[in-house]
Image (cartoon, rainbow over all chains, first blue to last red; front, side, top):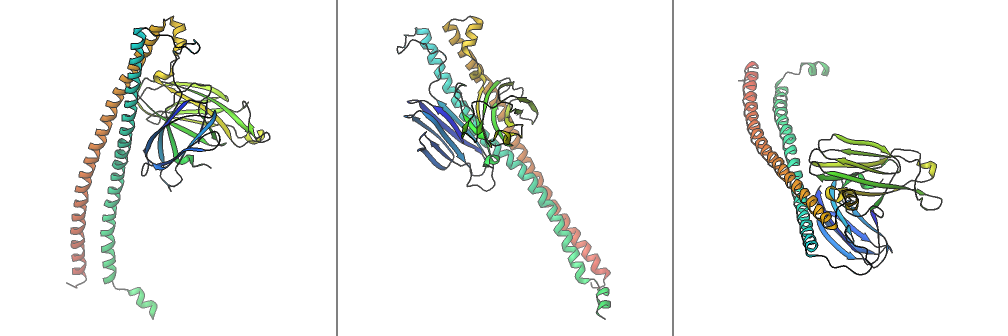
Length: 177
Length: 218
């Protein structure tokens, strides 16, 4: 359960993706300050949800893994609130005109932000695949070892049981009399 | 107890500190966040805690005397940072190996009952890499013009992208290594299992033959 204080008329975006665990799904819901559910999904693998707030207050979002019995889940989430601009000029309601160089800088900045976003998505997808591969690798090791020992054990047991069928039960006879 | 044991979060948030994300934790609860970052990346974390006051049914503005333990583990399970901070603090670390870093935060004290509360609100803000830079500060320190500052930001961004690409190459290599190892293991274990089956079969037959001959049944 995570909470976030948001002002009115701000754009919020929640992006999430399940990286590892079970069927890679999770329950999510987002509530506004009044307790109204503005977004609710069950067993979703990944999604991006944006919303313009019309209430100022504490927004709550929650990821739930209650439907799963024993799989751990790793969830990536990214909650973006408003605009991030360290270069915002304090000139009231007017936006001053930027020089051409500055405009180019802004364009490049936005493009680079997109690149970083793509990189993040790629990294998440790759992390998912890699986690799966590593788990598979380990599983193979343990299962194969187990099977190996099982074969040996069964072989030995079979021989012992067969032997016991054909052995004289001298002790048994003595107790009967 | 919440099902937090079964959920570990990977978090990437970029919002100013003053009104950042917050969550609740119990007294002995440990909350962990995973940050997957390339090497030589600076990570700054800011947190603020508030104890819940049962009497007034609200959160006290600040919780005095409650220490928070911050533990950061690197990708090879090595402890990078394990320090005790006060109820409000800021921690910084730079990664030396690329990979998944685990940032855990929990309360050290068991005297919450003294304050009459059973949960604590933790405000947390983690900034990674380029986002951790405070450009206003840099502008003041280096006396840069607006344009120079923008260019500096672009340079930082490009550097971050470069590091991420490097990290990507390293990860791909690891993935390939894992796949090849799996392939090898499947091969060798299959051969081993076939061999053990044959050996066991032969041994069984030989042993039983000797056994029956000794019993004069054959």
